[in-house]
Image (tube, rainbow, N blue to C red; front, side, top):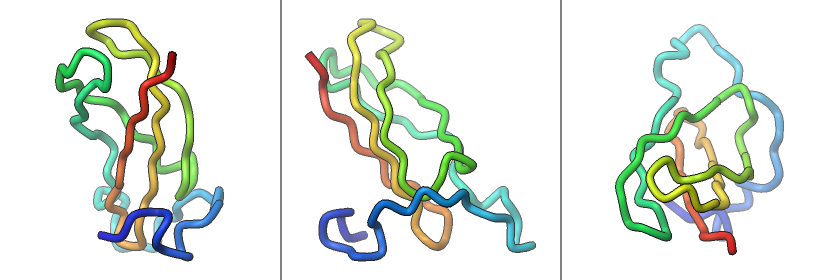
Length: 87
């Protein structure tokens, strides 16, 4: 899967993903990610209704330190999730 920087289709598309009848169950709603601070694997909830490209701050449920969460949904509903530590 190309990174968001490599794909022009991943630009700032804040439109929500729509159910085209093929089943909203295909859209990813959770991701297991490693905390960039403590390294623990945590499960975060993803919200497909937030748009194809999302950028927000969330705290680690283990060490309570903040991360920047970036989510990109592709046309098939698969999510690419990247975390960056925030100081």
